[in-house]
Image (cartoon, rainbow, N blue to C red; front, side):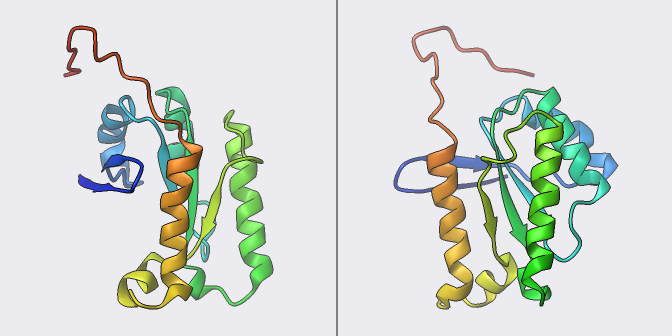
Length: 151
């Protein structure tokens, strides 16, 4: 669980790994999510757990997904990145998300971490944060109602 904020919002970020042991955790956490960042390796493309994550997000009512195509530093052919992007968009459409309109940010999280002063790598992180701020609407919370805590 990580918290961070942009100029517009405060975020609580919950990692939901693809391993089957974590599916229960994802279902529990996803029920309270206003949106999700789906991280897909540009080098490997969508994996079986990618499909599972999208399906689970749909089933528990996650309303918005943003995609981060990671590990682009490991891909030499730009056409391969485009192919992975098309595959991800098709998967999103298949499960009822607007794949054609979903923001897909391309970058390398590791390179951005290792080179914090190099805009070639950090730019995608800022683009991702901007996409979260603009694509996922600010949730309307019923602050005037009694508090309800899911258990």
